[in-house]
Each structure stands twice: as C-alpha cells, then as structure tokens.
Image (cartoon, rainbow, N blue to C red; front, side, top):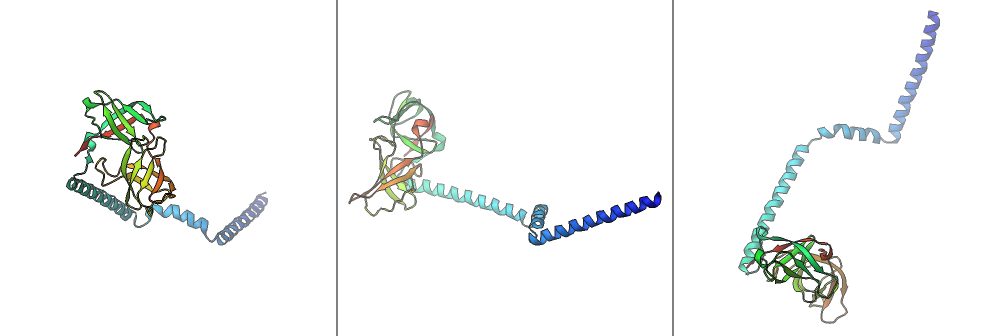
Length: 249
C-alpha cells in the first residue's frame, strides 16, 4: 500500500511539475510576444513611489505658482499706477455692492434690469454692473432703494471695448436683440470669429479687462467699416445676483 501511494504521489508530482513548466513557458512566450509590456506596466506601478525627482517636481510647481502670483501682483500695481496717470477709472473690490435682480425686461426693446440697491446704498449713475460671465451693463438711473441697469443689448448702450487677440479697440453698440454689434471703424481691422472681447484698457467709463463676449459672426460688406455680432458671456435672463462696481475716479 505504501509503495502504491509513493507511485501515485510521484506521478501526481511529475504531472503537476509538467504543468508548472508549461505555465512558465507560456508566460515567457507571452512576455516575448508582448515585448514585456505587462512587466513594464507592473514595474511602473510598483516603482512609482520611488521615482527620482518627485520632491523636485513639487518644489518646481510651487515656485511656478509663486512666480505667477508675483507677476500678477506686479501687473495689477502697474495697471493701477498707469490708470491714475491717465486719470482713468478703476474699481475697488472692497467697495463692490451685491444686489439682487427684482425685475427684468430682457426680451423687450428697453433691455434693462432693476436691482434692489439704490442711492442709499451708494449706487451711482454710471456704475458698472457685472454678473457670472462678465459685464452686464451700466446703471442708468437710481432711486432711494432701487437702480435701473441698461444692458449691453439695449439700443442706448454704447461702450468702447477691446479685442484681446489683435489688441485693437472697437465700439460695442446694443441693437435691441441678444447680440450687440461690434463696430470697427476700419475695413482692415483684424478680427476673427472666436476672438475674445473685453472692456477697453483705455476706457474712461469702465474698469479695464472685464470679460464681455466672443465674436460670433463678421460682416465686412461695408466699405468704410467692419461689424461683428457678439455672443455675450453674461446672461441677464438667467442671473439673479449681480455686482455693482463702485468706481473711484
């Protein structure tokens, strides 16, 4: 009986050993065919915590962030200094007024919104009004408790704007619909569909660099000028809260 068990175990072991060798052989063939991709991926995940340069990478990114913040502060200070020299307006975030939209006429010829802040809150005629996305319009008149804002889409709205890519000025004019017109008083003005439009750095009415919209279409049929339709970033029909920028002259 003992001899029979030994023979059975020997056969089982040899059979299992054959399968082990076959498995190793097939694995080596797979590695060969795949050119070690599985092994490389496995090694990638195991060795990742020990890669050289991880600490240096974090230091570099932190330095880049610090450099960006320093440059941003320098540009901000230069902008304030230059605008003071040129006697242009600038806004102070500390003095901005949050206001709720209590009435709106965004689908009519008048194109205006009414806010729940007025002269008692420090709102003045000519103040800039922004919402999520960028510029909405200008305060047109005030009462003690409310203020009326003429939207950029209003036919009464006429503002100097800036085309960022080509760095040229233009005039944004409301036309009573959802897409105000950008007028460039030069047939050769360099504007393209997709160009970003913001408030002009040289404007005497608005703080600079407030996002406004994107050039949606261009009409260059006129001989003396080029016009474009602007897709506004701020949507007055969907905005319930705005910021009124108190302006320091």
